[in-house]
Amino acid sequence: MFRKVLIANRGEIAVRVIRACRELGAKTVAVYSEADREALHVRMADEAYPIGPPPSRESYLAVEKLLDVARRSGAEAVHPGYGFLSERAHFAQACADAGLVFIGPSPAAIDAMGDKVEARKRMIAARVPVVPGSGGTLDSEEEVVAAAAKIGFPVMLKAAAGGGGKGMRLVSAEGEIRAASRAARSEAKSAFGDDRIYVERFVDSPRHVEVQVLGDTHGNVVHVYERECTIQRRHQKVIEESPSPALDAKTREAMGQVAAQAAKAVGYVGAGTIEFLVDSRRNFYFLEMNTRIQVEHPITEMVTGIDLVRTQIEIACGVPLPFRQADVRQRGWAIECRVYAEDPENDFLPAPGRITRLREPGGLGVRNDSGVYEGFEVSIHYDPMISKLVAWGATRDEAIARMERALSEYVIHGPTTNIEFHRWILRHPRFLAGDFDTRFIQQEWKGLPAGAEGLEQIAVAAAAIAALDGDGATGSPAPAAAPSSRWRAAARRDALRS
Image (cartoon, rainbow, N blue to C red; front, side, top):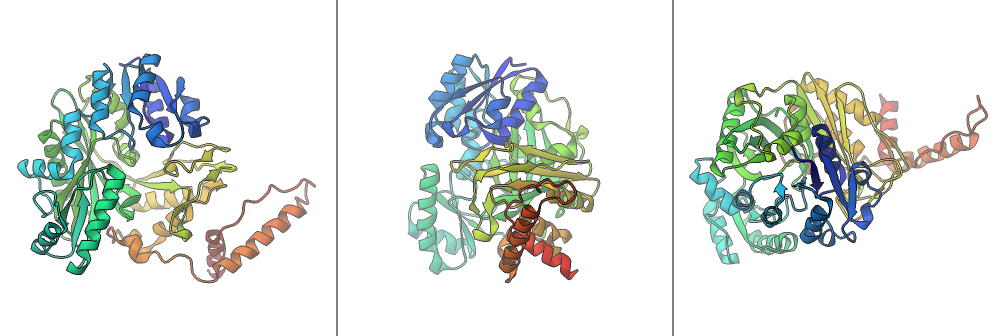
């Protein structure tokens, strides 16, 4: 086992890796930008080193600074987490050149699967089903128009590099194709420094289902079942669950086998995810591979009992997988809600700020992977995720009820959050029935009903009066109430009507 691991990341995933290393007896080295000097991962690690100003390109993306910290600290290995440099082949290679173990796949595997066009070619060669599309990248608007006409509308324009929904455009008619092509190229260039795009057929009523895979250095590859990631906003996942309510046993088994086959085709080592689109007839198509640990990995851990981050580290140490495919089982149901500092009533714009009060939920079957604490400032410089709240139940209904209860307990004062937005989703009849596709939020979310703003003002006034009156029984002042929200006002109104 490694004696010391550098974590080239921040936030809740850095905290998650620290915990796994601690259980394995490895010391941890954190890095931090000036904005993260007081971050939780900095406080928890055995050592912590500053790496520069808040902008990522000057800190968390600065390869030489990270390697310098590794040298100075005596770290033997680097865990990249997710995001930042986790899927950059040049970083994996730089680690190897510096004599460090990169806790992830080889640079060759990252390169092969990081370029979506190259990944499609590899999957076709491995007889993995892919969405029909252009054979490669397209260099001009004329080529894009011709490819789309041949495939048939609607089509998706996609960036060849990167992910996270950037450089993607849905095009319904020929008249939209040129403007969409320019927009996709511009966004891809800005996000990834690579403006290459290609075209795929748009899958009708698509669901986004991904399969976790693990491969070791001894040639063993297993799948660890699927995660339903269909509830999305602008191609960004919002709620995930495992198992998927869309799959039957036959499709689940077939997808798992294909995912393992895809990983073997590139000699994959480590934890990775094969993402699929599933249509209304349960046909599934390879979408892409994420060559890293996923944000939503906890739900797989909850239903299988496999510690994916610990297994990642053990694989990097050369330890063979301690189980075979027949040993991997799903038990119960798990749901994850990504809790963000964002305002659903203001087009989901980030709403960072200092957390003035925090009460995290708990109880049976509840897990909260968080990188914050009371008094912590959610930064404007990075993704405004506060935590990943996970609930497990013996059945889907029980998991949903437990998540509802956990969300109702979650108290965050300071930043505006999307907690009540998650509750809206969990109560929606289509979600409860498992009847949704990737357009669910786009189709169903209309914001709060008219009139909620007036109720909010009444609620704020009532809270102020209560604070002034204090507690009559003890004579002590009542705790200051956090500003109410339209969400809470709407909840009160619904309670009165019922």
